[in-house]
Structure formats: structure tokens, C-alpha cells
Length: 430
Image 1 (cartoon, rainbow, N blue to C red):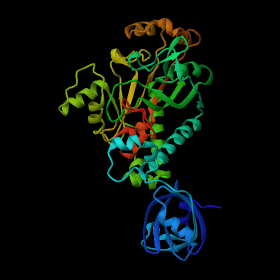
Image 2: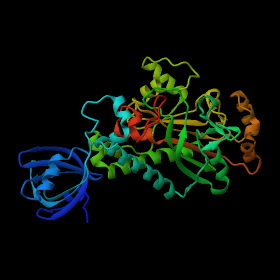
Image 3: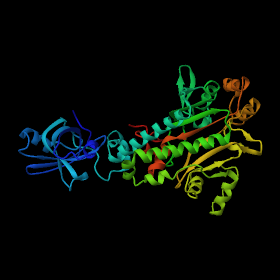
Image 4: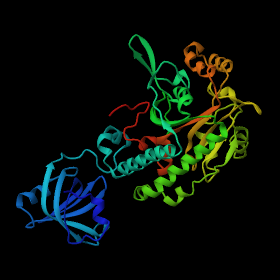
């Protein structure tokens, strides 16, 4: 039976004989001794392999094995204050499962090379820590929604109509017709709320945005929710509740991983509701006061969002954008004509939008007008119009970019480092 490395440090096990397995993280040898740092998914431990303490062929294998060789080791846990964590394993058995070739990644490699070798770089300490935090975020989303009575609902990835605009769609051949990779689960979710009322999902979304910014992926993981009988204020509260719960869960479960990135669990625990709310018009005034004069009617993008989010110590909602720049399904505020009942949630420290959402338009005529405005054929949305014909109710929802949240929590420079294998405008390999 093998022991996970992290278990070696949880209690006083000095003198115990254990078996561990994993990959060589670092190695050096001198004369009759080899020092190896072994890693598995849970952590690292120092192993000392001394000639005479194990069969000679095993000692020779230990000296010969390069980094990333996979090994199984048996030995005694001993105290060593010089070793990481204050202990080491003194090997009495050393079995090489697979000898690795010279590893192509060394220190101070270029970003492009690390992307070319992403299938190997994913083993790195930083990537492993990020993936653990990412897993926690996915689990927290599930726990948050399920604990509030939401059902998980899946929608198609291949669609015949778009949600966010044709210019950012990936077109694919679907037998003798055109189809598109989904931009959002939303339109199908709006159909499902008439049976389930409260639903959510986490699934890939695709945006053919020709962007080279540090916060855009062409394929990303989208946590979305839709709820019947809900207005804008209802989903604002759900959004801030979700982000707060994610931060709390990561703080409680991933302190060692946060430390690797210089992030603080204490800072995450401060992200609690309520979050500040700012209307679009007021946001423009705040930006103008800093010297950034944004024309009215311009959607807030990377630079504006970065500047605005640095003004708050919690994520901030920006609401009521001009309706002419919003998607067709976002309704007008009857108390503020010309403005949409919508929002973006901007993360702190300049990380920008992490959630976007709105109430949903319920008027068939308005939907048709806006589809024509956007160059769409309303005939392609007949099924969507049916939802307004048969028992329509107020409803609302939002979508959260999982990678954007991971990037913000860990303070990453680029969103490509918040996912195992990023898809960018110029990157689809490996």
C-alpha cells in the first residue's frame, strides 16, 4: 500500500516504514549518496538514497534516473531539519517504473516554449496548484447552486442560432447545413426554467473574438444560471453570493496553493456581500474624474474596467448599460428608458468583468425589432418566441467565466494560465 506524500506530514511518523510513489522533481548525487525530491499530486518529500542501504542495482538506478522518471520507493521516515517540511525518507528500496529522457523544459524558458510543451508544463508546481484551485471553484459552484434548490441542466454545444452576435461565432459544417459552437447556454436555459424554474450549468462556451488581451480565451468554461420569477436585483444577490462562496471555499481548502501564488486566504474571506453597485452613467463620471473620458454609449472594455475595479476593495456591479449596445434579449428599464436591466460584475485589483447578466425581454415584438437591429433573422428564433407565447414569466440569469475567476483569485498575469490547455487566437496546439 502506498502513502500519499501529504500524509507523511500530518502527524509524527518518525521511524515508520512507508511506501511512496511519484515522479522525480529534483535530483543530485555525489559519491555514494543520491538526494531526490519526489512529487505526487499531493506534495513533495526529500528522499535520501545511500549506497549500501539497498541493492546495488537499485542504487545505480536511483543515480541514473533523471527528473520526471516515475518511481516507487520504500524507506524509513527520519527527521531532517534541513529538508523541506523537516523530514525525509531514507530509502531501503528504489524501483524505477519508467526512466525519463532528458526533460525539454529547464529554468527561464520562454512563454512560447512553455505553451508548446503545455502537456509537460502542466506538471509544474504552479500549474498543479492552479488546477487544484480550479477544481475547488468548480465544486463550489455546484455546491452553491444545489444548496439553493437549483437543478443542473445541460444544453447543446451545436446550435443553429446565436446568442451574443454572429461576428464572434465559430461556424461548423453540420451535414449539409451550417451550425455554430455555442456562445452561451442561455437561450435553451430560458426554455428549461418553465419546467425546472431554477437551473445552472458549467460547460464550455466559444467566442471567436480576435482578441489578444490577457483575459480572453476562444474556448472557456462558463458557469451559468437562469431563474424564473426573478428580476435584476434577485440575480445581483445570487451573483455576489456565488462569488463570496467561491472565495470562502478556496480560502478554506487551498491555503497551500494560494501561498505559492502569494495570495492570501484572509483577503478572500473579506469578499462578502453586499457588493457596491454603480450605474453606467455614474461609472463614466467616475472614470472622467480620473482623466479617462469615455464617450457615452461605448461599452466598457478592458482599460475602463481595470480602472474602475481598482476603485473598490470588493467586486463592483456596473448596471444599466445603454440598451443600444446590449444584446437583443436584455430589456429596457421602464423607470430609466434607454437603459437595459443588465449588469457586469468587475473583480478587484483591475481584473475586470467576471460575471455578466440581465433580466430577459418578454415582449415578442421587442425581441423581433432588436434581432433585426442586430442583423439577425427573427425566423431563426421562432422556438425562442414560443417561450413568450405560452405562459411567459419574468426571468433573469447570468454567466460567470470560470477562468477569469481563477485568474483573479490567484493574481495571474494572463488567463491562459488559469486552464490546463488554453485555446487562444493563435494557439490550438497541443
